[in-house]
Image 1: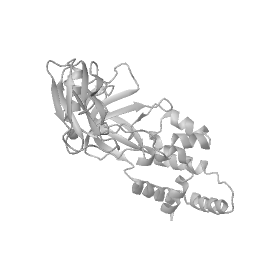
Image 2 (image 1 turned 30 degrees about the vertical axis):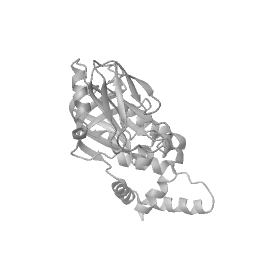
Image 3 (image 1 turned 90 degrees about the vertical axis):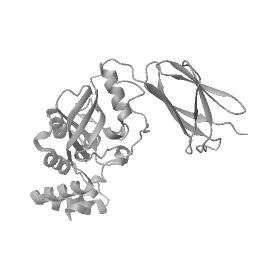
Image 4 (image 1 turned 135 degrees about the horizontal axis):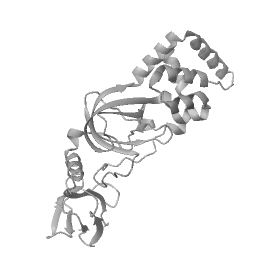
Length: 297
């Protein structure tokens, strides 16, 4: 019964904080290097040692445990449900506060304890302390502001609220940002961690950047037909700006790439009947993604 009550309580959170409104880009780190002066950003490679709670299922189990140790609150929640049917608005602030204390215990920092003690319903909705998860990672390579051997980061419970699903034992390339409200490091699906094994180029570029070397850059992107769909294979693109003219041909998915480029400014050219061009600045970036629209015939 308690597991059924937990989702009912979570539905009391305002819908606008559930919607993930970010636009996820396939490029995360190579378009701009980490800013060493930005104390609110950290970039590192880390192995996940612990992820808590791991899923909605585990969160429901924790609600079960909570009601077992707080049986008086179970009956109160039942009373609130009846009042909701009668058209009254229940006040679940104290119930949420107790569950948050049960969920996080002594790991709440002093700022969070103060917020929990004095926050009204709107503040609790914004904080989402009862809808977050904690990842503890062993730092394997620090690129920016992850000097400690263990790093703690928080994310929301699911994708609709921009949460990210870590897997214990996996190694990720991670970018996190510190929240000014509670000084916790946060990670989201807006700038999602990636398995380090799936991002070797970016890891190698970060290694080169850290020791002061200029990583080799690349330009890549997608060719689109006038109807907005990706074009079939065979579209030729030319690149000016290096020591010689380079060419690339789009594949069956409309994708193209120029690799191993030196830093500088380039001109991308395409078009069979009408020649079109676009400037690409790689003077300070390691990569650039370009969308190439084709003219209608």
